[in-house]
Structure formats: C-alpha cells, structure tokens
Amino acid sequence: MSDYRALADEVASEIASGHLPPGTRLPPQREFAYQRGIAVSTATRVYSELVRRGLVSGEVGRGTYVRSTSSRSGAALAEPRNAIVDLELNFPVLPNQAAEMLQGLAPLLRADALDQALRPVGTAATAAAREISASFLTRHQWAPKPETVLFTGTGRQPWRAPERERR
Image (cartoon, rainbow, N blue to C red):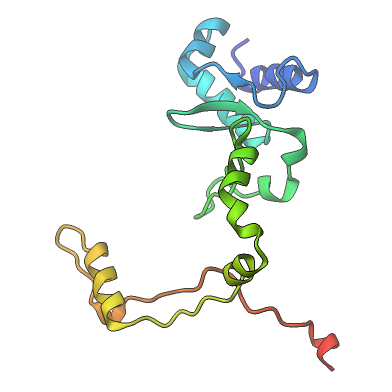
C-alpha cells in the first residue's frame, strides 16, 4: 500500500474507532515507516495529511499526538497550506496541558488582575524603547533606524458597542 492517503485513511480509522484515543503519541516517523514497511518520505506525507485533516498535531522534537475530537474546527483547519501565518497548530498538544495552564493562570482569577490584563494596550513608544528594540532587531549588516521601529498593539482593542446599539 504505497498511497500515503490510503495509509492516512487507515490511521484516521484507528483514531475514529478509539484504538488511538486523544493524547496518544504516534511513533516517530522513521519508526512508523519501519512498522508499515514504507519509505520515510511516505510516512512524512502520511503525518502531514493527518495534520491537514486535524486529526493529529505535532512539533519537532516533541512528537505527534492524536488531537481531541472536541478541539477540531473546520474554519481553523481550512487555512491554506501556503498561508503566511500558519495558525493550524495553535492549540494544546500534550495531555494535562490545560491543568498546567490553569496553574499558571490562577493569579488572573482576581478581578483586579484580570481587569488589568484585559485593558487596551497602547502603541506609543519612548525613544529608549525604540533604541532597545532597534538594537535587538539588528542582524549582521542590517540595523533598523530607531525612529522607524513601529510598535503595535496586542490585538486587543477597546470594546465598542455595535453601531445600532450606540444610537
């Protein structure tokens, strides 16, 4: 069976049947190739297809894991493969990661801390901040001029009621 899509279908069936439950770590691609009697390049294509379908997620050096069925989202996984920013792997990939994140976010459970964290962030910068940022961005023979460094917000914008509600 040399068609990578057929192999991906086979693994997808194992995931759908529960034989490979969420959180299960798949073998490294070389091992997967050896187990299935296929080339490593074919195994790489199988894993890429499983990621594209939203069935697994992985990071180099950490492994490939079966995703939870509740975290699949058609819209996010419809991202074109050649997109400038790939948001496809923007989700927890390890078992118990939510519990570990909860511990780190616990200090935000105070109303005053959460209110402070959710406030809009300005984009104005001081001359010193521009100098520091320009030196940080300097690489080899390229150095930005501090006055050209642009600071942007965090994507959090002040809430505004929809136009129809403001009237």
